[in-house]
Length: 154
Image (tube, rainbow, N blue to C red):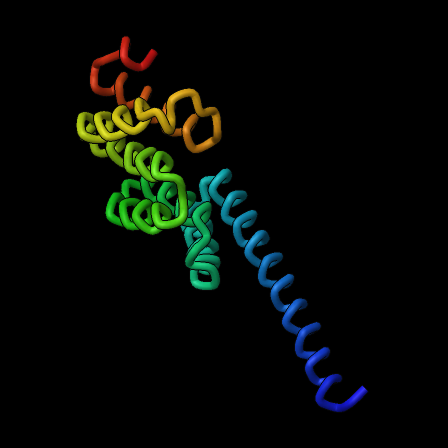
């Protein structure tokens, strides 16, 4: 084997090892954030998510988790930004559900409910049972109850 070919093989192996380590690091950071969140150590969870997002700005689950934590902490601006970033990478109904959770925190139920309701009634979403659509339905139901329309929630 020539020196050049050995160098290429080594570079390929190192690249594969680095990619695997990156994926493992991403999983470890998301796990760290999840554990910290479950123990109400929100600053640690946010730090782990920020580190993860610095490495993988396209990680939708990290953006959604950051939005959730920020919402719980009343940091609506950060939550709004995180929802906006996540919306680039997720199903539109999930993006609306993320914004709907913000509306629940803000008390601005009407527009969020109307947007989710319109999308969920569209033929593309009617009858779907995937996670994003189920989440959209759950948030829409919460918004309907908060808006004083419990019949619509059913």
